[in-house]
Amino acid sequence: MAGANSVRLAVLPGDGIGTEVTEATLAVLEPLAQRHGLGITVETLPAGAFHYRETGEAFPESSFRAARAADAILLGAMGWPGIRYADGTEIAPQLDLRFRLGLYAGVRPVRAIPGVPVALADPRARDIDLVLIRESTEGLFHSRGKGLVTEELAEETLRITRATTEKLARFAFRLAERRAAQRGRPGRVTLVDKANVFRAFAFMRGVFDGVAKAFPDIASGHHYVDAMALDLIRRPWDFDVLPTENMFGDILSDLGAGLVGGMGFSPSADIGDAHAVFQPAHGTAPDIAGKGIANPTATLLSAAMMLDWLAARGAGQAYADAATELEAAVDAAFGEGLRTADIGGRDGTAAVARAVADRI
Ligand code: ATP
Ligand code: MG
Image (cartoon, rainbow, N blue to C red; front, side):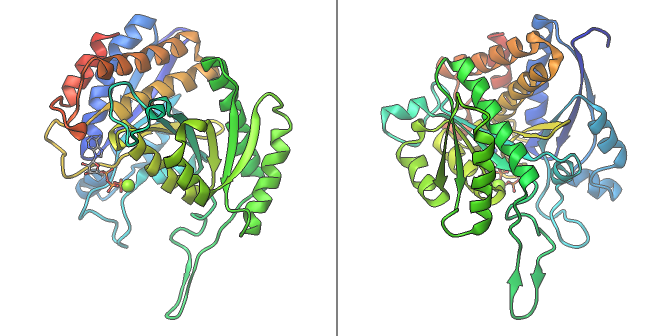
């Protein structure tokens, strides 16, 4: 496809509801692309647990290369109970992408969507609009699968590097600037750590504070992770951008999802210097796969993040406009009564896609 603003999109549907939510999302992207004149070429690539069972390969090198060559990657979900690698580990090509493409920033927005029940009774919970940034290549996951285990002890490593922390902090402050401009209010970045106990986190704070000096218009601060767990329940509406270590981010982002309607409403992006993968925060949900009831909202919102990221990387303002419209269409659909099964309603995967597409 020609044109200054044309992009190549690699789609990895994966397993279980991954295939269902990506199909619904592509069905919405089509009219959206048409309306905004986006030249999006889609290439669907095989990978995942069922592909492994059929072929002995979970992530063919050809799929990896095509994904790496694309401008953006949209992923459903991968993995399946009972299908594992020969060594017993889970099939997770999404982790291969994260490490091989250096996707250090795991961006997990936590936003109350109009009409979708929130977990807190306080009316201010309708204003929840924060974003966790989970460092995704080091931290407490550093020795993942390679920790020392003997009969008598097991040891894993916490690793924080200056280079990755600087990139993560810069990413957080730039995101805060973008959000402040979009929302017309001041931005704030709060590093979540455990600097009172671990020297590694005191080091992380020092590096973070150094980067903060370059962003005088954005307020910056720190919060201990245990206090953050409490405050994400007590006053989540007070927070804006929250960068944190890998494992803390893993845990807090599930807590965040629980605040605003569950996994079906939680988008994510894994972003590096040159590549990015956009996917729902949930897994393949074997318990509901194949029934047509999976909620595709998390994937739709991930696609909106993708369009916004493409715009920021020079694909053109039309991509940013499309992102805004997609998010607004999701909000309008739920605000006007759309109810998926995970929040006690009857609207299935295709009904959500139709309701959102109708508002574009
Ligand atoms: P993973 O190990 O990949 O994180 P998981 O075991 O944590 O996966 P999920 O697949 O995320 O589990 O599912 C957790 C629960 O949430 C399941 O009961 C599932 O049915 C439900 N769920 C997840 N995603 C959705 C969705 N998009 N729509 C409706 N329900 C969902
Ligand atoms: Mg999980």
